[in-house]
Structure formats: C-alpha cells, structure tokens
Image 1: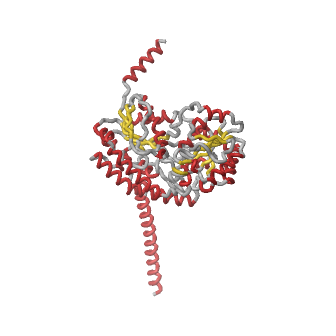
Image 2: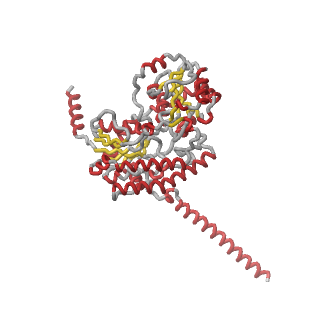
Image 3: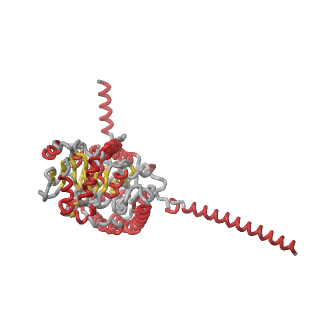
Length: 511
C-alpha cells in the first residue's frame, strides 16, 4: 500500500509541474467533416492541461475547460445541399479545382478582418496549428508568435504540398489526390499520363498563383513575417488523416504522421427505431448514404426506381438516408431516415454492405467496422478513395452517370453473395485497427513532442528547401552527360587523329 501511495504522490507532483502550453489552432475551412478530423486532437490537448484557442466555423456546444472558441461567420459546406443530379456532369478538372481554390482563398482572407481574430495578435502562444488545405496564408502566424508550426490535413497530404515538405511524389504510382480521370489503381499508361499532367499543372498553378496571393495577404495583416514558402519548409509536423491500409502506400519522413481514423469514437446505443429495424433483419442490412453534402432525395426518378427495384428483390433490409419524409414506390424492406449515426450503424453486426459516395471519413468507418463498400463517387477525393479500396478487394465502384437497374443489381448481388468481399473486409479491419497507439494518442504524443523539443526540426527530410534541380539530380546528370559527351568526343577525336596519321603515312609510301 505504501508503494502505491508513493507512486500516486509522485504522479500528482509530476502533473503539477507539467508544462501547460498555449496553442492557437486556425482551421478556416467550412467543411464539418474536415473539422471532425481535427476536433479530437484539440479536445484531448485541452484535457491534458494545454490552453487552446480555436478559430473555426464549428464551436463546441458546451464549454470546455482550457478551450476557447472564436467562431467564424458565414455558411458552412453542410448548409449548401447540392442536388444529386448536379454531380453527374461535374468535372473535377484542374481548372475547376483552381477556380474553387481561388474562391475559398478569398473567403479565408476575411478571417484576418475578424475583430476577435485581430485581437489575438497581441497574445502569446507556444504552438500554432493550421490546416494544410487550399491555402497557406495562416502559416506565417507561427513566425509572428515565434512558435513551431504543426499542420493537419483531413485527407492525404495534398499534391501541391508534398514537394515543399520533401516528400517523394512520383506520379507513376502516386495518384493526384483529386484525379478525376483515374480508371484503376495501380494506374495504367493513360492514367499515368494524365496523372503526370495533373500533378505538374497543379503544382505550377499553386506555386505561381496562390502562393503569391497568400504572401500578399499574410504580409498585409501580419507585417514583416517569414514568407509562406519559408514557413511550410519550417513546419515541424504534419498530422495526416491517412493509413497505409486505406490509402496508397508512399514513403513518408518522420515529420508526417498518419492518424487515419482519429474521428472514430466508441460506439453508442442506436436510436430505438433503427436498432429494432437492424436487430430484426434476419438476412442482414444494406446501409445507403451519400453523405451530408449531396441531397440524396433529389436523385433522378430513373436512378431511384433502379435502386427501389433492386432493393425490393433482396432478402436483406435496406436503411436508406433520405432527406424527405416519403418516397414514391418505396419497397417494404426499406426504412427511410433523414439522419443516422453512421459509425454506430456500421458497427451493427447485421450490416453487410455500405452504399456510399466514398468520403474518406465514411470509408475509414467502414474499414474499421469491416463492412465492404459499393462506391458511387461524386467529387473531390472520393473516386480516388473508392478505387484504392477496390484495388484490394474491399469495394466496387459504380459511376453515378451509369446507374440503371442492371448495373445496380449486378454490383449489389455480387457484393452480398460473394464471400470474398466479407472476408477481405474483416481482414482489412484487423489491419486498420492493429496499431501500437490509437490514432488520438499518436497525434497528441507527436504534437507534445514538437513542443517539448522546440520544433523537433530533426524530423524533417533533408529534401526540404532543396532547389528543384538538385532534388531531381539535374546538376549531377548534367555533369555526367557532359563527361560522357567529352569522353565520346575525345574518343572520336583520337580515332580521327589516328586515322589521319595512318592515311598520311600510307599516302607517303605510295609516293
């Protein structure tokens, strides 16, 4: 007992002297799914005694000790429900992405005009956390406050950020994270061709268009601070919402830490009506949801009828996220819900298939729970996500424009009746869960590690800040080529000289 008491006294003593750092987190993007990735880290840091100031569109419903919200105004992505038919002809071209980025960047600039945000400029912080997505204009805050910089991304590290972080980025096997032309993984020749074009186009456009705008904005509001390019080179840590079981495997330096699945919380009891519907499903359940942005109830009549006809012939029940109260010709085995606790639904043992748009958070929840996916990608990284899972036998992809009864019936019945999908889902779930630390503990450990070791710059790749011609060894290749050309030239010159001498001697003998 005395030993236990001594340990408790020591623990209290150590906790009393634990460093409580002041952390500023600026997370400007108005997408709730993005914020869901970051919120667990911020909440846990506050629980551990650090003082958080969080600038976002999503303040906490209830106050938390050590956690101060600065709420941003304006509509969130979830406030804008997009009719499903609008996604049929949506082309995620580089031009479309750059136009979208430009509009969002101008929204981000307004944050600097926010009075509460401006009042922070006279505060003192020990760490700045920003989002690595669409804009770099808040990274110089770390230089303003003389702190380390931690970046978080709700997806894989974006194509426009990898080179500046010193990450290998070979387009022969690493797809552009928003590649709309991708047909399969691993990529075939045409995939690699267009992927290379997209990667080069995106990097050049981002470097020469958006970086200059970010530079101008940060200088205007922060004064004499380090450049945006310099700040991303100085970043101490990147927390990426990826995991090698779900995303394309790529080499990562210690500076980039995978925390895929960090948003997945312990299961909670289901609403009673949904629980009863799932519990009583003798042959299993298909869960159908196209996310929070696309309005599934705006589906075309032909697509709705195709799904209804297929579902009516299934022995399984179908839980369908549908935003209105009723549906024409709804099959008897279908239950409509305007909202469902997706993670808890997928955890139910009777759920056998998830029909999804392929959002990264939902795909990770499905992998965690071992439920295979029939993917209908709509935009963004969703096509990429589904194709990656299809390549390992966890998912099948169906294009929204090609939906008809035959296509849906074939895909649904194959995935429900071929045991390889259920087997692969369980296998991938075991791999996804098998980690030395939980994603949350991993993220918090490395964030505190950066503060403890004054920026932990030893984690960064030696490629950070290296000129592009050195990174690609163009100077070395140039010298080698010059050497080879010189040797070949010397050989040719020597041969010509010898031949000339022999010809001269032969000519003299003849005379």
